[in-house]
Image (tube, rainbow, N blue to C red):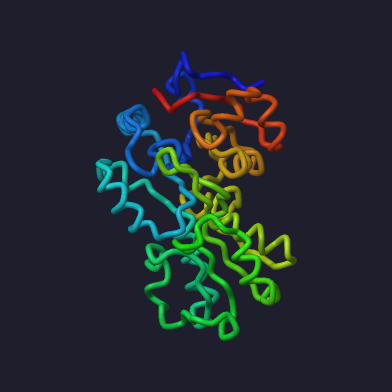
Length: 272
């Protein structure tokens, strides 16, 4: 049974944990503005010196996301807790594929990810050794059939996906993410290497979590909560996010079973 913390707040359970992994988009901000209640939580965690990581499936390096959060008004002492799926992917790319040519699928704002090896970027899929997917093209942001047609002759090439999320809500607008393109590629028989939640590498890179009691907080059952379940971490789902309509219509117990991801706790918004 998922326990509701709307009355008691995060403060009622926080001392049970050594480390908190807290999602950014959907929990701390909505892509446009910060959530005041969540920012207060981060301030309180700082006051009690509780270890936390702002773990996000952002397909860009840590520093790029930190600059974005600074523009939104987040304090530097909170920004310094950021770790991204893009950073985890970048570490792998530099180590294993640094001299390989690639074809990029994603918007120009993601170019920061491969600045150090930008000369390996090819404009033609035939000339590439692997596919780097960070998102969707700006002019093809809602047309998955375009990517199916683009990739159908190249399923023999490996794809690196830097954001396993299928969708995200930017304010009140729902947008497709890199994970949706990767899913199309997989369904055609392609091989995808994912970096980000729910896959373990990003958790392990972000902080030493060995033998620690951990709580994962997020709004996505497919990534935040599934990632926690896979690694036997406790989890808190924020219901006023990606699954808001589903949870309002069917309740968390039914929805979580549908996604095969079971949270320990639920809050409508992250509050102390």
